[in-house]
Amino acid sequence: MSLITKEKMLIDQFLPEYQFTERHDIEILSSVDRVYKLVRSLDVSRSRPIQWLFKLRGLPLSALTLEGLRKIGFAVLGEIPNQELLLGIVGRFWTLKGGLQVIDAEGFKSFNKEGYAKAVCGFHLRSRTETISQIVTETRIHCLDEQSFRRFRVYWIFIGPFSAWIRREALRIIKKEAERKNSLQASTVPG
Image (tube, rainbow, N blue to C red; front, side, top):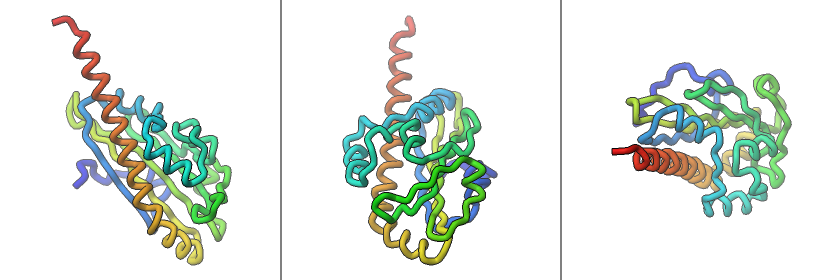
């Protein structure tokens, strides 16, 4: 069970209703501010499985960073430093090219065109102690009509497990990097 309670978060403001979701969390031996910096600079290109999955979907490997995701259509919908970062995208994800729409935060909220779905991916952090942080990634998808729902449901049966794998891998990379920096910092402290 997740340690983060369901207080009102950015994700609830941008996509309170949804038909599909996935949520993963991990504890990290590091401060929240260090973990948040790693979320903002996340680069999952070191993960061969994620590279392979992006290639398979026809996405450019340049999309393996936050800036790269923005270039392919993701928008930063909101951010509370050291607490939450929320990305959103609108498209026809079940199609070969994805039918991605260029949107900003306000455009995301107001977008309501049939034949599309909205998706958000959020990172939420909480300090468990001064040296232990918890990070949760949650993805939500809301299909804007019944036909899109049926198409996305079939797509999600096949893609959902890989999507979950990417999220868990991103959390693993963040944890590894944060804890590596902690051990490097500890080894340089004079004793």
